[in-house]
Amino acid sequence: MTTIRRHYTAFVGTRMLASGSPQEVALAIKRHRTGRTERQPLVFDHATGRQIDLDLSGSEDEILERYEERSTQTMAARGRPSLGVVAREVTLLPRHWDWLNAQPGGASVALRRLVDQARHAAPLADRMREAREATYRFLNAVAGNLPDYEEALRALFAGDGARFDALIRGWPSGVNLFAMTLSQDAFQEASRGR
Image (cartoon, rainbow, N blue to C red; front, side, top):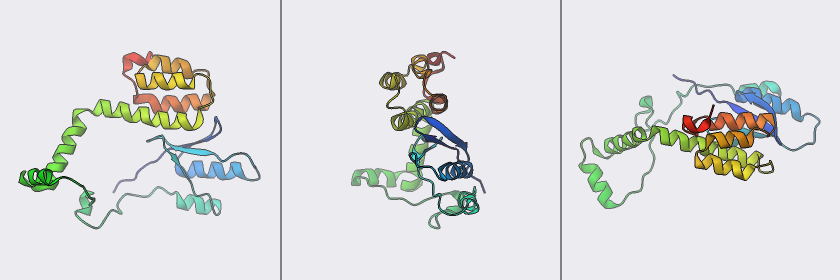
């Protein structure tokens, strides 16, 4: 039984409002919004850089209960749930199915083996791509009006960490800090210049 720990950060414009567990961020937003009419805070998931919506309805106790960290033991009942197996649909051409079914262990074993081989073949490249995409999602939502925004994106996708760091240095501290956090794996160490 494992517990997935999520980490979120909320921004109001370019000002970081809160960072922490879903409970901490939801409560900070709820307390911040009381009696205020300014724009809605944007909440970002640290793992993906994606914006998420938090349900802030009800009392603080209800929010705490709603976002309590829960174990991942509740899995799909089909297949082998104790192993974390989840049934999903895959669409392939007949020749692909013929090849998969001819493999030792059948189609499922062959697909799992192929996916694992691909995951291990380029883990660094995958981490870099995921970090760049997460950073881009965040910057696109929050930093579009900041100076050198487009140049920073060019540096991000060109893999020029030192230039990226230099371009975002003058941005509001919360935006700068969160962009640096998300882009931690986006560059080769030599290009970061730290």
